Length: 251
Image (cartoon, rainbow, N blue to C red; front, side, top):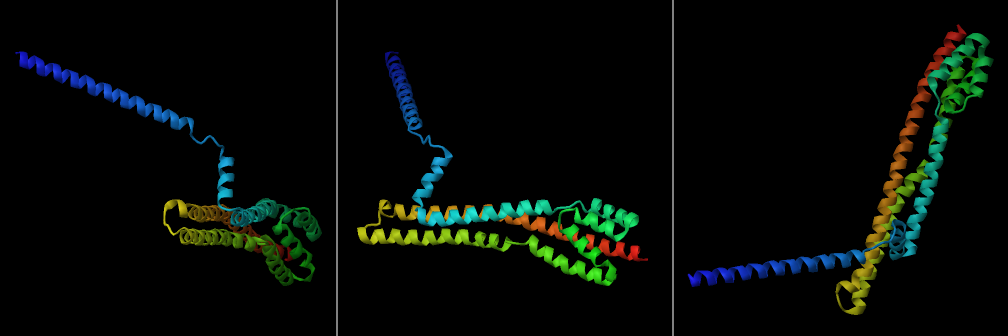
């Protein structure tokens, strides 16, 4: 009986010691977590981005930033222009048809003159050549449609250039950063992480920033292209409707 009591006592003491050690370990982990939280990075996103920009070397990061600024400037200008060039073609066609019926070609030209957008400009050119015949008016519509399409696509090729250029500049920074890393290894005669860390960090940062810029500009580019396609389709449909309207009016 005494042996059993002794065993139970020893077991209880061991259990209590284990619990105390567990509590002590938990307390230590909690203290370490609090210390980490106190020393955590409290910088804002702007400050972190600025630090990454500096770490990636301002030379290469500056070129990538220039492509972003120029690309965004072109994208914003194109979006504003294309939104202003968008016309309610159904309402415009109804106004042109009504003007032709009530006041003739001159009244329709006045409606086209007072309406903004490439569709109205094409209509004005076709109506202006109406006195030379429907065929001549149709040729004028087709020719001026090509001119308006060129205006819609103005500077879009530059935007596609910046999309291709941004990751290329990033990859160039990557290559030069790796060259710097290997040069540091050669100078130090050691392959420790501390020796190559700076060069590899520059390489990765320039690549990331170049890809981010390309992604941002690609989104704007796709939106602009879809907007141009929509306006061009409206131009073509409206031109066909105008030719039919002119033929009916001529009869």
